[in-house]
Amino acid sequence: MGEVDEALHLEAPATPAHVGRLRRAVRRWLRAVLGEDEDAVDNLTLAVSEALENSAEHAYAGQDEAGTMTLSAERDPARRTLVISVSDTGSWRAPTDSGGYRGRGLALIEELAAAHTVSPGPTGTTVTLRHPA
Image (cartoon, rainbow, N blue to C red; front, top):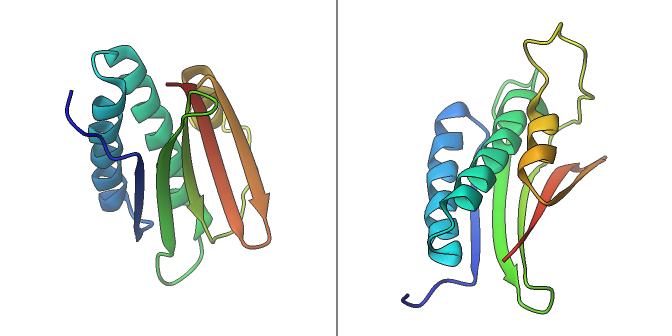
């Protein structure tokens, strides 16, 4: 395998069109880092996509303009772990019961990533995924 960038860092407007762009970028990076482990690539890509979609849909709801979402991914060689974060500077909206049709993003992320944290705060929200490298 050729030389792989150790880290990925992208910022984009928090819009559905940019979710796809960032999803494709993280998939390319994951393929380069994880190689033939297509299950892990697919699972992590879907988990990241859910976090990006939550940011695009909820973080800036009620605002006139879309804010920014940031995707960062890196290998932590000391822990032999991939760390992927999706951040925004919008407002946290706690999940609600939507009768089962919506609101499954965080549960899906929990199933797809080895570990995750959601860190809402006054300056935005960060979802961090961890997965063995």
